[in-house]
Length: 108
Image (cartoon, rainbow, N blue to C red; front, side, top):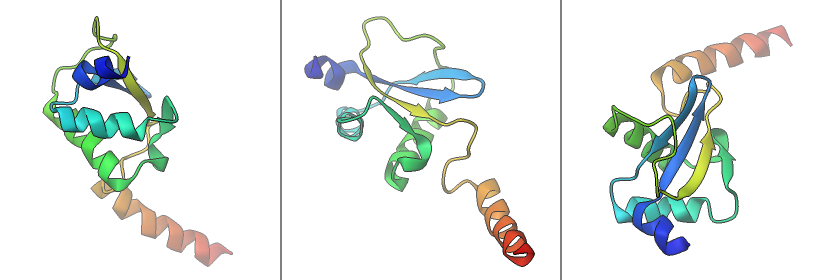
């Protein structure tokens, strides 16, 4: 089973719009994601390392067309639950973060 995952596994990205399946381009990306999901099949985006979040963002950018259903004969490496939250490093999140934190600290 793990050989199939390493040869042609995909990652499921759950967003408010729906599920998206991403196919890692290289063996090393699949191996890295296999390692990330070694203990848990589903992980929220906020618990992923910056490196993993960058890889997911890169895969999204590279794959302009994506499948809403699991590609046939493609085992699932794992599921990332985004839940509408921006990935760490997004400009919008960085702009809102300090302002919201400063406004909250002034109120208390």
